[in-house]
Length: 100
Image (cartoon, rainbow, N blue to C red):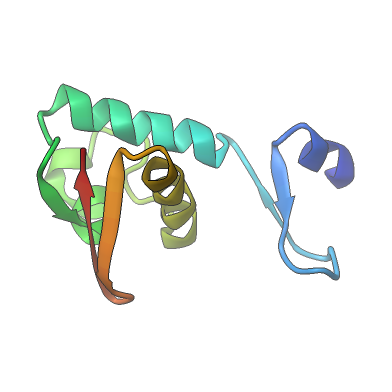
């Protein structure tokens, strides 16, 4: 079942042992799109937000990505970085992101 879900993009194995997996309600690509849409709708382009602000602030409380797992957030943001829509910087415990 999980191998099928991985092929369909709805799951991802963690580690080579294949005994733990992410199960996606939304794929990282879909989360990246949701974050990018919010950035566009709220005029956050060219602004810098901490990852905490992005997922825990009152500004995002009505968004589905509010409270998102930090590892999933990193996956979604890396997609935006690859697309040239964001830049992540800072140290691991105090990272920020600038949206373009």
